[in-house]
Image (cartoon, protein in one colour):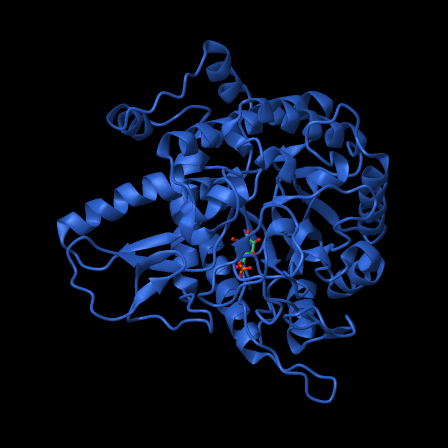
Length: 477
Ligand code: BGP
C-alpha cells in the first residue's frame, strides 16, 4: 500500500516565458526572459540591452503554448493531472510593469487557460513572477527600486480579483531565494549593468542585492495579505530553490559550514515568508556586513501579516560542500559545490539523489510544520524519436525513484500534499535556453534553433505517469 493520501495533487509545472512564446502578441511587453539569447551546457546565456538584430532569443516563440494551450491541456488531462503549475506573464498584464490600467487582452488569455483547465477538473497553481520581470523595470534597477513593490502589488491584486473564483493556489515568486545568487541577479532581481552583460559579468553589489531581496519579500507579504482579503480561501506558498547540501567530510568545520550555508541559501527567505520576520542569523549577518534594510514599523508589520500557508520548493539535486577537503577532480555544477562520489549525474551534470528528497522533505517539515508541495522536480535529458516513439526509461527511473522517496517521507509523517513534475511538456531550458534539454512527458518537435513542426508526441513516460496518477502512487512498475 502506498502512503499517498486521497486527493494528493499530482501534476506538472511550467512557466509562461518557457512555454507561451508569442512574446510580442496580445499587447505583451518585454520581460527579462525576452532579452536572453540561447546558450548551452557551460555556455552562459548572453543578456542583450533590449531585443537586438542578429541574436536568437529562444523564449520569443518557446513552444507556442499561447496558441496550443487547448491541445496541450487536453494531454495533461489525459494523463490525469489534478493540478497544473503555470505562471502569468507579468508583461501580458502590465507591459511595462508600472501602468495604471491592466491589459484586457492579457487577462482574457489567462481566463481562457483557466477555463480550459477547470473544464477537466485540473486545479491551476499560479506563480505570479517566474523570471518574468518587465524589462522596463529592469532599466530602473529592477527590484532594488522600492517602487516595484507597489507595481507588483497592483499586478497581484488585479489577478486576485479577476481570478478569485478560478484559482486557489498561488506562489508569489519562483525560487525567491535565487535572488541571493549571482545567476538570480538579473533574472529575478533585474539588477543590470549598463549596456550588454552576461551571467559571468553581473554586477555584484551586495547591499543592492539584499535591498532587492527585502523588497521582494515585502512585496510577497503585501500581496498575500491583500489576496486573503479578496478571497480567504486562497492558499499561498513559498517557492524555494532547495539545494540540499552535504558536508564532503565529517570535519566539524565542514559540518558547521554546511549548516550556515543551509541557513542562508535555503532557509532565510522561507523563514521570512512563513515565520513573518527575519531570523536571528540574518540580523547578525546584516550587522557584520553593514547592511541596513531600513525596515519601518509598517514593514515589520507587513511581513508578519502576509505569511504563506504552505511550503513549496524545487528539488533537482544535492551538492557537497567543504572548507577542508582538497578536491582535485571536477567541481560540482551550476549550483556549485563538489562532486558526490556516491551519486550519478544527468547529462547536464546535475547529481541525481532521490534519498536527498526524503531527507529534504523531513528537514523542511521539521522546521516549518506546514503542508508541503514539491513544485519542481525533474530530469533534463536528450530524447530520440524512433518511428514516432520516444522511449525514455531514464526519465521513468528518475521519476520512480523520486516518487518512492516521497512515499517514504509520507511514511515518516511528512505532510506532503502535491507534486508537480517540472517541464511536463518539453520547454525552453531556463539556464541554457536549449530545447534539447528535455524534461517532458510530451515531446515537442522543435530543436535548439526553434526549427521543427512543433508537433506533440507522447513519450513512454507519459503512459507511465498516467498509470501512477490513476493508482495514486501505487503502481510504480
Ligand atoms: C528552475 C527554474 C525553472 C526550470 C528549472 C530547470 O530553477 O525555476 O524555470 O527551468 O530550474 O532548469 P533548466 O531549465 O535550466 O534545466
